[in-house]
Length: 187
Image (cartoon, rainbow, N blue to C red):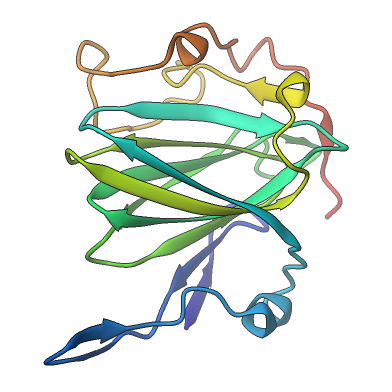
């Protein structure tokens, strides 16, 4: 497995070694030892899956401590633009984001640590997105979010505002400027 550290400290892109033959393919999607060697101490407590049509945007979300979560995300079917935004006060990349295309074809995975907002936009119909969650279980009162099209963040989602499909909750999220982040960078 190839591990690439991104612009944001603690956010990693994982590219599995895929073994293909006439039957299909095989790859290791998670290995605790590989994570530990990369300095990631993740105790996964929940697996989530979503099914979405093209132009669906989910995010930008996280959970505040003590329910903070890390996420290992990937696509089983279709493709997404996956985004992580650093909201750790004092971080050298506070307010910056990374975005990667994750797809069933490229099999890339992204690790988003606690202290980063996460969201994705679907690029194809019938996209199946899965993620492992570390830290706290889902806890609605601790949810934190920022509106997907915040001009200060200027994220290139690959979806126009007129075509974007959002939940009512995601349409009402706050701006980045109004966010009082509950996270502090530990360096």
